[in-house]
Length: 614
Image (cartoon, rainbow, N blue to C red; front, side, top):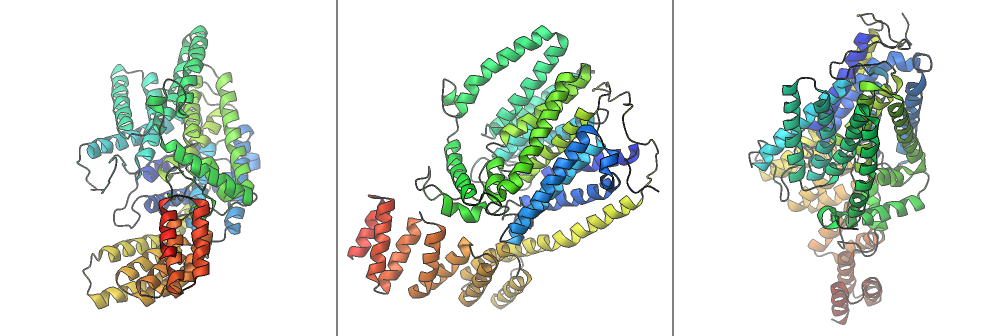
């Protein structure tokens, strides 16, 4: 029995299915009983499927240097380099919990990136030109499901009953921007299937589905997905015209280049289309990107830490923001987020990986002929559309998982040189294909390993899910506990979450609202032990001391907040009040002067002058 070998066809198809189901269920996963019903549930599903794929992929990975060649070998090497860099960056991050599991309500930590990198590797190894049509179908089906859910939300018939104060089209992704991004990219997959369908009725069904998909995208109010779809659709249409007649292809390419110019300018509020396409939120993103680059300049090698953007943002935010005092926990650009939080150690391997995938895909697209060319164009179109969306997007797990799967599939189809029929999936096998045709697994231990890794994920992540569910239940007091029983449960949860600073922040807030001041101090102290930079680790005790008439005890926390959030005039005004209460007028005067220097003539400046004069 060979431990290191190529996959046989049965094993390859099993990995394909797990990779694609991992994408589908990560996108669709929600668990309403959790305090974070969107991202935490997606993290669980994503890591579980990543673990299963890793187990089944073991035979090939053990001998990747011999069992893979060309693009696939390079793709696996680069994703391996990214994983190593990710582990180094995680080790260098000050708060390991956040580095591993990710920021609260984001979960873009090492676990999620590791799982997506594994799905990339699985796609590289398991897919080929023959099987990649499944990628389009699974992507399209997921798009149809989100579209159907979008119609329910638009009609006010959402079965989940989310309480949304703005656009209701959050689907299962938690935000209209994410819904737009995903539907735009899924629309590219639907378009490819519609063009290549041989049955006219099937073609019509795809076309209707695409129109429905684009309708919900439009109703989301976000243009992220629109740009992703346009980029992908243009590539597919140009390729199709090129196959019909090269002259048509060349003319369409020139027209696309001419038409793309005013559209690209409009994104930056320039030109005649600006009034239609420009969205003011881009200005907010410029604030975030400036802060991200400032973080990178101060921490160029390792960044500020994996998914630690939020705890550093207040310190690095520009002085005069578009919306003064607005905070964020993400750079709102995948590239700027990784650059600022992972530094060059992580960003260079990431950039090398996406550069190579793009190069391999474009090279294969130019060399391919017939339906093979259109197939590669379809995957390449989704890839480029995602790269463009990622410039202004957060790495939402439900969308990001398809970016990594698409990259792996693109490397796979770029390596497959066999002619094929995209619509039927029939293909003549390549002579260079290095799989055996046995129907039974030659490496049954890979199934056992997959099961063991899956069980490990359950053991690691289920406690997090239970803790999140318990915090939500306690906050809403769904069990209608008496006062004493409530406090007892609160204390129990504090003990259960001693390593989880994110849940402790929630519990400290609950303790304050319940009047358990001493317990809130104790929780805040533990938060600061876990994360000395924690904004809420300083803010909550300051608030508690001030509420109980102890301004002197709050001062040290307010002073620390000035360091962490130097443009926060509300905090500085409260610090002034605390100084004045202790008759420390010199210190109060210094704060008033600082506010005046930062924002002369502002309402905060006038209030500071009034306080000091009083």
